[in-house]
Image (cartoon, rainbow, N blue to C red; front, top):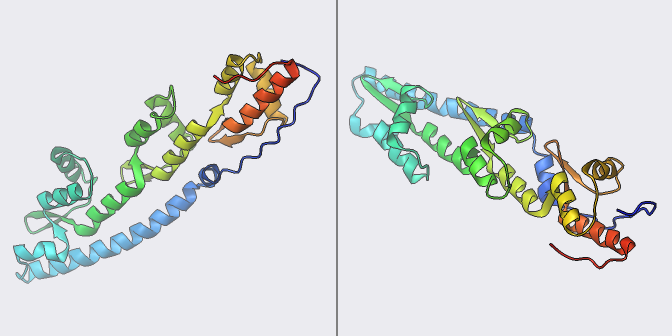
Length: 249
């Protein structure tokens, strides 16, 4: 790569999706969830209290349970399926037995409050499980493996929220990360791309340029990424200094 001539990148990338991802705060997610859980607890307590009062008065009719907001395990599972959750009945029953799904015992019957099921459906509409999040991201990010992805979650490089025994990843975060994969290069990809276009540069030299702010970039989850338009401008100007015409990959 030519030395002695400083290249000024003029391209300014204003990406609201990247800004949204960088501004996503786990503390905000926890605060929002705490409010939901407070209301959920209140609603469940109210339903269960009324049902127990009726049971003690021997006025609790089986046909009225669903109308009061209490599902049998079969009914709760059917409601989950209607909500789009692809969970097997066996897996669901196992969660009920392990108490990872809240249930109540009224008389000799185990029942699941309606708000618990609807909250689960709402969560699944807004969040991915860790496995689902990884499956979605790997469609766009080459070379990512599940272990590395879990490592990012543990380091909070990927925002997540633990609710009960399960960890959830916001769908909006995975959509934004997929956008970054499609429209940005990480450092290794940028160096490789420049090499494929006839510009030889070592990774540490490229990173020094990033350190000095000579190449506009974003830092997301501890990783530096460069917009494709920025790298295209850099390649064009480097080749111009070398007296070569730009060529695409």
